[in-house]
Image (tube, rainbow, N blue to C red; front, side, top):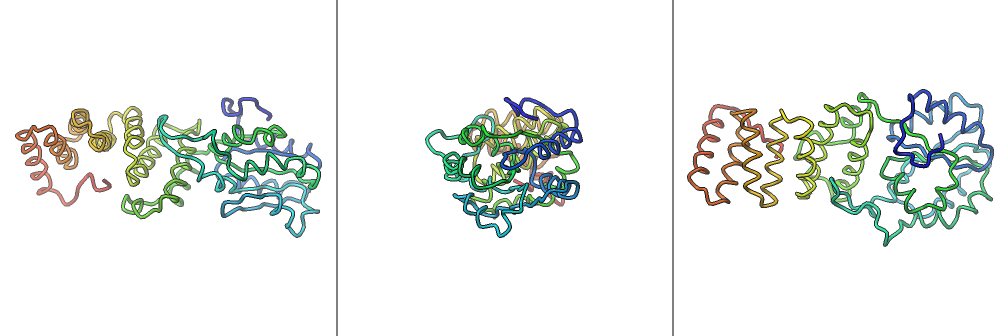
Length: 327
């Protein structure tokens, strides 16, 4: 399916999109470029299916580190002369250091002052790829990386034979979350800035999936907010939890962590209002009462702060754990 505004269109069904991809592969003889927007897990399944169902020589190239020269890597493949279709996964690793993630308009995803070395290389070497390889290249990319190709490698991208999109099913999202992301907030704190950066980009790509249910989007937003919180990105943390509170206004946790983000930003009046919403939903929430007391203290409302702390102490005395344990 060749698209001008590829990210504004939805395939009729995953099966029809797959059949369209297979047709494009069959029609492409010799050099070709195809871009597939999907998760890495989906890309691997597509590769296995194409490899099983097509009579042509199909291989996959997995890039596990940033690169600056794809031509040499392909040229050094021992059987490059036999390969007809080459799936390439992991090229987004070469883009991550150039992207500054931030939710809700914060951050600079596509800095016009810099071009990732790999994209500059592909722009300059496109004729060399065409003249040297009788291979149809299939790039498996998350949404943010495909957008980067569109904006920063237009010469290379314009030679595409098609762009295909495979939205993640909710069951696959759960699989990705359980296998890719830490299970506790303390584990997020142990991530290096580079690891956190990569996971933020991956989660933001998943959140943009068009077929997500509100519950699935809410769960992903909580994980993304936790990542921003662990890196002290308070503005992005607020934007994420503010969005989560709009999706699930009945969630005390969304209002609680929204309040924490506001408190970190020094917006204490708004933080108290957010804690009040959390308490309205769950009156015995220790974290909401405790953090409310901190915000009130910062507003010099000391008597109200003491009452809030007393309420938190009473709740803590009667419970074995805190509902604000992740934060």
